[in-house]
Structures are given as structure tokens and as C-alpha cells.
Image 1: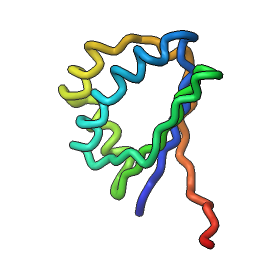
Image 2 (image 1 turned 180 degrees about the horizontal axis):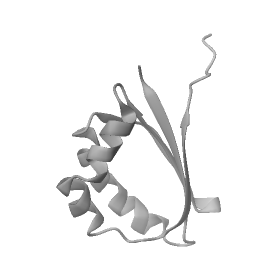
Image 3 (image 1 turned 135 degrees about the vertical axis):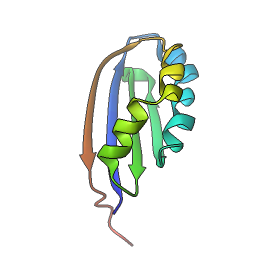
Length: 98
């Protein structure tokens, strides 16, 4: 079963480029734990970054392993710490087929 997590970040105004330069550094470590990015969008006008990540197995176990990994820790050594707030939730795809 595929689980999708929607991640919504509010980034400090004027710091989106700093965040976008850093963000790809977490993709490799996440993919090592079976995650894949479905999409990522930056809304510069509202200083928001929204992305969805999916996992085909036990999402919670994979997230726990990813969070404890040395690869994630290394990526976060250079985190610009510009995310003011975040909302993270599991969602389901309801896109109609045409």
C-alpha cells in the first residue's frame, strides 16, 4: 500500500532561494529509505513550499529510520533553518481519471 505525506512549509520571506538550494540534500537520504518525491512547488509570492512524498511500505517505520539516519543528520548540518512553520499530514489521492 502506498502512503502519501503532504508537507507544507512557510519559509521566511526572502529566504526561499536559500531553502531551495538546500532542500535537494534530503532527497537522496529519503530515497535510501524507500521514499519518492511526487511533486514539489515553491510559491514565492506567499513564501510557501509544498511537496508530497510517497512510500510503498510501512511509512512510519521508514520515516523513523530516515529520521535517525546519519545521512539525514549530515544533510541537516547545512540546513539554513528558514522554515517558520510546517504542516505535515498523510493524504489520499482523489484525482478523477478522465
